[in-house]
Image (cartoon, rainbow over all chains, first blue to last red; front, side, top):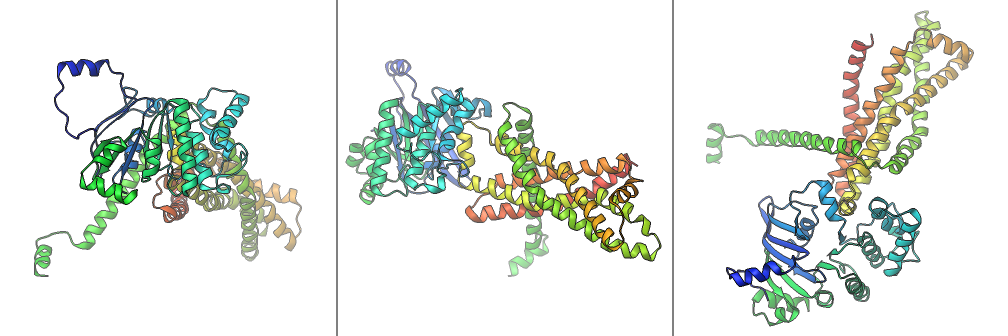
Amino acid sequence: MTTTTTAAASPATATMEAAKPAPSIRVQTLRKAFGKQKVLNGINLEVAQGETVSVLGQSGTGKSVLLKLIIGLQQPDSGSIQIHGQEITGLARPQLNEIRKKVGFLFQNSALYDSLTVEQNVAFPLERHGGLSAAERKKRVRELLATVGMERDLDKLPAEISGGMQKRVGLARALSLSPDIVLFDEPTAGLDPITASEIDELILKMQKEKNLASIVVTHDLPSARTVSDRLTLMRNGQIVIDGSFQDLEASKDEFVVQFLNRTS
Amino acid sequence: MASSTTAHLRGAPSASTSASLAVLVRLFEWFGELGLFCFQLLQGVFLPPYEVREFAHQLDELGSKSLPLVALAGAATGVVLALETHDSLVTFGAKSLLPALLVVAIIKESGPIITGLIVSGRVAAGIGAELGAMKVTEQIDAMEVSAVNPFKYLVATRVLACVLMLPLLTLAADLCGIFFGWVTSTLTEPISLRLFIENGFKHVTFNDFLPSTFKTAVFGLIIGLVACFQGMRAHGGTEGVERAATTSVVLSSLFIILADVVLVRLIQVFFP
């Protein structure tokens, strides 16, 4: 379990830190405010390759904002965000786009292009960045859709499929450029428990197959427990606790106890 | 009560002054954001890669599909002009000038402005609502995270299509207006189409025709720019989409009329 204060590192620890590979995602003292409302107030978070971290917390605590800052959709007021050791804050669009090709993003409401079919949605990033021929692209799209169990609905529009199916297509699109990092914004929100557990299994399967570094923003504690190696709980723009599910259960912090009791 | 009166007497801004200042600040913010938007649009237009397929799709969507509406509006304008001017010209004994009057009126002003306003109504509302809906449902964010520049894919293609299609649609409106003007004239007093055209174009030069037709490219720029700008800054769910669609039509129509005033004067100066 990580505490919120960091002691000064000894020389031996510093040498070990230097030898350790850089985490895939490193967020340091990140701050973001909208007007007078401080949404993130000094967030620190590291995610190693192959690791999945769930970010839990009440609505409006800045969980989704954190993801949008990591992918560069918004700019932080201060702090640092590194993807594979490269600082992304303040990057120009062309350089940021190079980073974005390595990062998949599953939106809360899937955000599928409503005028494009399922197949066209997944093909969209590949048409621009995949460097594949039309035949290769078609094959890749069908493989991705088969992975998420949507190979029979190629020609359907997003409005013609259910919320769970939209999430599957969104996941296929997020994985289309073979990213090594995937960010999930409420992957099970609005889904029934069975569909939600199917999405969880799909996320686990992807992580195992592709050794992804992932951040899952969610309210769904059972889902977070299933898919995560580590959980963090946010309150008032700060991380209250960062550790395993057992660490959360063992915590005596009133907010953590209240959160676990309410959501379990 | 007493303190507010004292503050007022000391020269503190009243509520109406504060409201006026807020409106002024919002106006400057709007133009500032529009300036930044234009800069991103220019980058989208000139820097590769180019979204050729989407551009072709928009030429069809914004141009070809506006053709029936524009042709109908042009025809109606021709009919009304023929009906309205016929009696007046007969009164002044200048009936033979009807073809020339009709052609000049349609080519120099009625055709371009009617086309601009009709396309503004159809296309600006469509673009504003489409991009607004994409914005509030995070589809534009999804495009960004796929490392696709939405200014290139969504904005540049639509603005360029509007700029290119407006002069062509104006030609269609002019043709329909002149043809149906002749039909209306010939129903009251038969005249051959050839004679009507010859009389109509006798005093028309390229200086009358080309600047008036190509000024509609500016109308196209206004429609595309305003509608994309309003759509891309939409927020607040369905209400935000509705607001984006409405303001796109209202502002682009208003700016077209204002731009027409300036352009007519410029054409008079540079193409006397």
